Amino acid sequence: MKHTLFSLSLLFFVSCYNKEQNKTVANKRVSAIQAAVVKLVPLGKTTQQFIMESFSAMKQILPEVVLLSKEEMPSHSWYAPRKRYRADTLIHWLSSRAKENETYVGITMNDISTTKGDVFDYGVMGLGYCPGNACVASNYRLKNKKDFIKVVIHELGHTTGLPHCPDKTCYMRDAEGGDHTDKEKGFCESCKKHLVGFGWRL
Ligand SMILES: [Zn+2]
Ligand SMILES: [Zn+2]
Image (cartoon, rainbow, N blue to C red; front, side, top):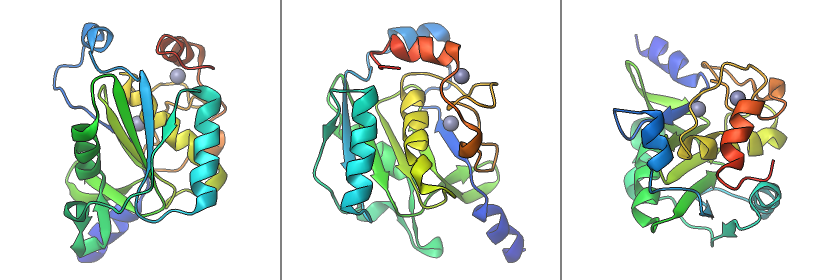
């Protein structure tokens, strides 16, 4: 039994966390929380290269992005039984720091996890409110670390209210328990249109 749980939690997935039960298009459009100012926060384990590559890739899409100083992981996000950090706790913590019209994006090289269905602690690449003002992305589970920006903008896309996309080559596709970032070629026309409406340069 223990073995089964361990195997399950080794699977990868990228997820979105619905802050509000009732997600309607109207809700998304009138949300007061929009990505007017995106604040990038390096958390826990990072390198200067990891931070600067993420920051410059973000700047291409959102020139107003602000890079904050790196910080320790908040101690209350530590999940001792699996020796990793809880992504749901992290986005709640980041969200509480965001002022109106700010979105916080945590980036880390540490392993992060959240509850997925029956699995209490499931390893993930990222988690973001959908919609909301915070997300977190980790490169720990990524096969090709150069694809990390895809994880970041997927989670940031959720914060603008974008759900998962049926187009398997779109950055907003559901990872469905795997790492498909190598198949993602860009945002599809529909997702692109939505994000351009939020000031993204695509
Ligand atoms: Zn997602
Ligand atoms: Zn799409």
